[in-house]
Image (cartoon, rainbow, N blue to C red):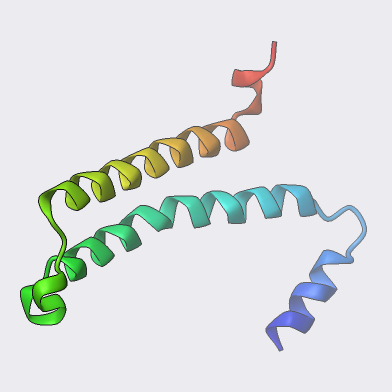
Amino acid sequence: GEALLAGIIVVIPGFPSTTVVLLVNVLAVLTMPPALGFLLILANDDEVMGPHRNSRLFNVLGFTVAGLIFSSGVLFAVSVLFPQLFSP
């Protein structure tokens, strides 16, 4: 059902498919850091992970990666929504 609807929408003449693809990518990048945060919370749970829970070093690395992904996502979103800011 949904795939058929998406296929029909995409073949509409003049449909801005490039814009839609970029916006979907922005959404995916911006929703990744919260998912990583929940994953880190789970990786620190003693009851779930037992002796394999995260060390302080891996927590710092994990939150650093999540922060870098979020920062990159914000810059990507700004460049997609306001492309004139990055053009000469």
